[in-house]
Image 1 (cartoon, rainbow, N blue to C red):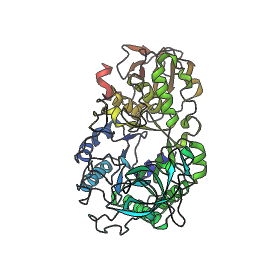
Image 2 (cartoon, one colour; image 1 turned 180 degrees about the vertical axis):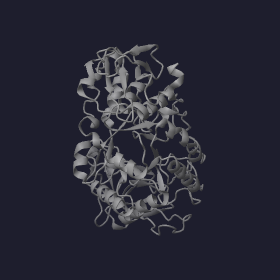
Image 3 (cartoon, rainbow, N blue to C red; image 1 turned 120 degrees about the horizontal axis):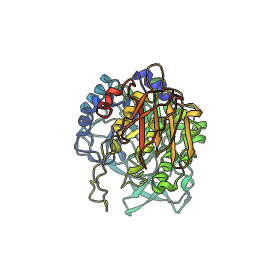
Image 4 (cartoon, rainbow, N blue to C red; image 1 turned 90 degrees about the horizontal axis):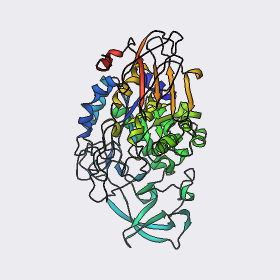
Length: 507
């Protein structure tokens, strides 16, 4: 797995690798998040987190923005632009201090890169554009006309530091507003060699345009500035990976060249790269660069399972998932900032099922698991008065930190077919046999009887404490492991190495 290679190269750890998405949509603003997160690093490292996915670190259109309405890639909270010096999360100094703290504790960081669009232009420009249909971007709504769009980006607060490029309408393929008429729609910028990118998702027949002012990566000046930024931000911050936003809207040929360029020029040839896609296998086959993908189909299977309860056949949970057929490229997840309550892609996995889902991504060998901040720490209440029905706060998942720690301490060894129990629709489980440095574990979702444990006569206990009592392994190496209804149990030997970290549940 490329992620393992990258972690071993830049942040060696003697145990399993686990990402934390270190934010949620309503994370605290006011420039406080970087400092708050820095205060959690030692605890996260002890828990077993080895990598952080950070939100966009660059200056957005608004000082309170989550960061995806990008304004200036080259401003990491250093310049007084868009009514503030810091981003929502803090200043550049705060960011660098956080990254140093993660390095001191052996964690690595991946940053969210927004390369698809810009917002918050410093001035408008007049240029010819063609309106197109929202549901068919290849169908024009003639005639073309002169519009006034928000496409002039001068970055006066930065005043040419790091990059002297100023952006104009020829650096974009489309915009979504005409100031002259006040019309909101989709306008394709007209001119020589202008047009939508073609190697993008086919939704709406062409999904190059998403929002704001859409970057034209076929423009050599645009491509160079993005390549330069990618190399610079890796070297400036020391992070070792990117999560790319909106990649299905970005020409895949550009994306392949960008990834190759950064790996060749940043000094980090094993740079980790991940994004969100729907047409997973075909994209990965064409890209020509190793690229990891969030396992969105598995997330939707978790969502369906949580909604249907006992009417869902757990043996189908891996159907269509990336981790089942391409595990080397799969980053597995339960929820994230896009799927959380209140967001446009809301598909929140119900809390009762989340311990089961996390057990499946954290305690099995395949995939690179990503834990959501909102599940570990809870989600704050919606804080935008302009959004109707803002979501209430969501509580953290009980003892998720213990499940992560179980991955760190006990989720090792080959998962043999005879120790993988998927015989019943509502009862599944597996045994990890351990390795020379770690003892294994037995995991049960729902309840059931499992064999395959080679520890005759030992006493085993549920490290979560959700299933009371002890189990003694029989002379034949088998034991009846159980768990509460609609729950999980993680069974370990009372003599297992690392069990002292769960002392309160072993007494």
